[in-house]
Image (cartoon, rainbow, N blue to C red; front, side, top):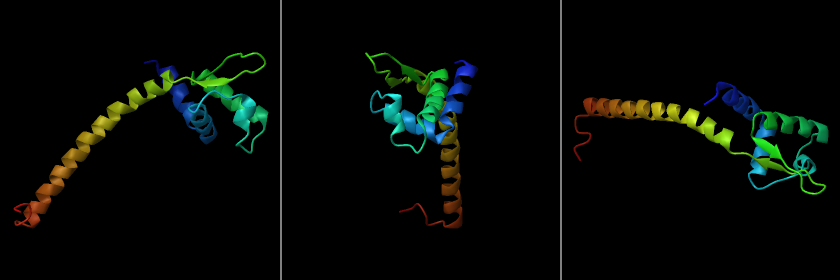
Length: 116
């Protein structure tokens, strides 16, 4: 996994407007004008957000006659998920140890606990 790619993905995801654009594109392709509609932002401002998403590889644009629809590209998101997955597993192990400790403390403080 390339560090630069991962950095670009997380930087792009850090902005709520860009996350909202990705959520909209998860429903299907859309033009810049269609993506601008739900926001209180200008079309040039949305275009700048889309360029950040394109640089991160999260969005691509194609040409369909006069339309230039944007499309969600999932690969970088998958790489970010893979990166985060190792930390989820780490936390699961920590929480399991904490659960075991709490159960032990409950038994020590109440000898009748767990008998039935």
